[in-house]
Image 1 (spheres, rainbow, N blue to C red):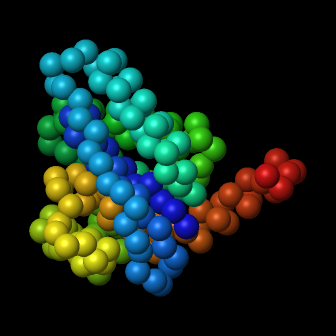
Image 2: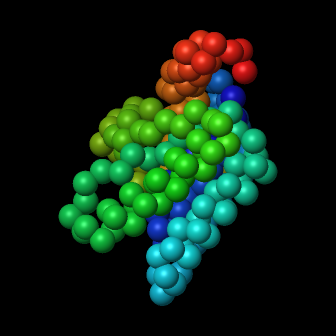
Length: 175
């Protein structure tokens, strides 16, 4: 299974692509960070993010998309940008006809490190180790996106396949 993970952000949006099966080590395919200029108009920033994510989905042809679920933050401006970027990421996957699953930061941390309370350094170290990388992916947004993809391979792969089968059955097709 190939998964495209997205750590949504309006200024920096991490994207990571891995391949794997539950219970086995994943393999790195690629990782990126999509940047937008905070000085640009919001509509242009969202359009750039949409085009970039759409291109990456087309290029890597994942079987599923995993997006970090937006959680409450104290800074309303930050959470709004993250929520908007998250919506664009979900849309990019849905537009391609892919199953899209969202995960809380705690779910991702627990899947990758064994602890839902892991800090950024622990997460990055585990992603580096699990993917057998010579050095940690940078910036942290890229490591977080890879962690989301790993989490989905290990935890969400079966769930996504069942959901896709149920959806096909409701439509009456085998697509």
